[in-house]
Length: 241
Image 1 (cartoon, rainbow, N blue to C red):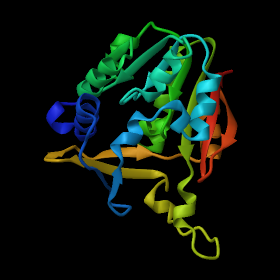
Image 2 (cartoon, one colour):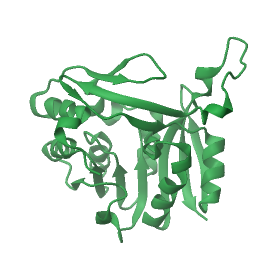
Image 3 (cartoon, rainbow, N blue to C red):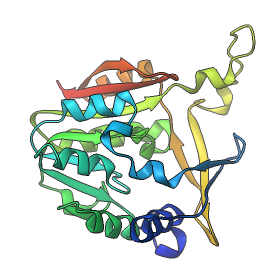
Image 4 (cartoon, rainbow, N blue to C red):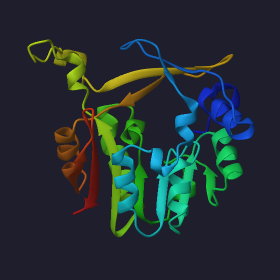
């Protein structure tokens, strides 16, 4: 489902920055955490400005790449600079317009689950910046992994990063303070606001690697942790059995 521009705060912020070099404050609200902000300039970072896990993922990309949730296109552009063919997708028309303006050659405004991708096959699928989060909730993670599997060419791989939020719920003694009756601790709700534009609330998933490993196995995928990041995050590679 594509985003309407009047309900797309991140897309508006990305377009403002891409077209003028400036953007206002992109606020992130959540019932679980304090209000936060996303510095819009970080969505336009160069490869040298990316954290180590993202650069590592780019180094592992091969063949025809699908960049899911491409936003402003920083990963797509970095891959293009390596002469790698990239299909760069996002559900935001404004972000897609910005990627085209920035020089992304195959920038598409399309849904990852949409029919436009049916029948296509990719050697690498990248879901970066906590890209597994588009599953929304843990019970929808198998659907995301099965969709990835269906879009992979033989021998292809998925490169995705996520974070284990367990640390958020540990007390000073390291005890895990979370009631399982409340669901999985990595399910977060968000809402974004930019200027006068307020987006719809949405669910976002942060999944620990052990849970990802088990879920991948259920979907006929092998998950491998490539590396740990600096703050409870990690990069994973998934391949079909």
